[in-house]
Image (cartoon, rainbow, N blue to C red; front, side):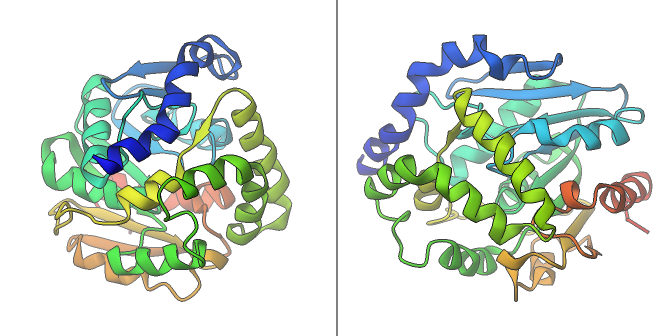
Length: 303
């Protein structure tokens, strides 16, 4: 009950502005943006191309406007969908939505079901990679192949979390939500400077993210830290799907992370490195990322 009440700090404001966001600039920055209504959230997404379904989750707080290069490279060959995870960007939660691991898996499953044309090749970054693993375990028919970008195992994710919130402020109920609401604009700049290998990319990412906030976007990071990353509720176990584990070797935020440990959760996985990329290899080195991805989708391995 307490956790549900805490979630209201984040989700009542997003619920109240959801209609305005759906009618406002967040719906018009690209001509193909649409919203998918779920029972606990609305999901903002873009979709281009025909053929086999390839679905990307953006890496919060990066908005989907930053994924144009991936659309250009992949839409001629695939039906490409990019979506913002509920609780981030302009995918706004309804009042009371939880960000637990169990609920996050259920939300993405319902979103993929509404997209149709499955099974889907699913690309999930960082912490959302754990959600992707849980989804593949619980809804195996929805997922054809799985791509996890910058995803550590549970223990590695906890170490990463401790570095991101060294004083435990964001993990304190209510205080974390209120602190982030007050400081999120400042925190965005600090996060990109910590995560991106190429300093020239920092300001464009900051600008796009702050514009997303100006258009009503949300950043429920404290609720995610407190709920999704406090306990995986036995949602994680090894999955049989062919999996590509892809990581940037110049990610300052994951210095020392052993991404190979994630193979315990994906035994049929191959680990590949995108040299010179930071936390967002799909955005920082799109040509290399698309090369690995294309070979993997064609062969079941990246080759």
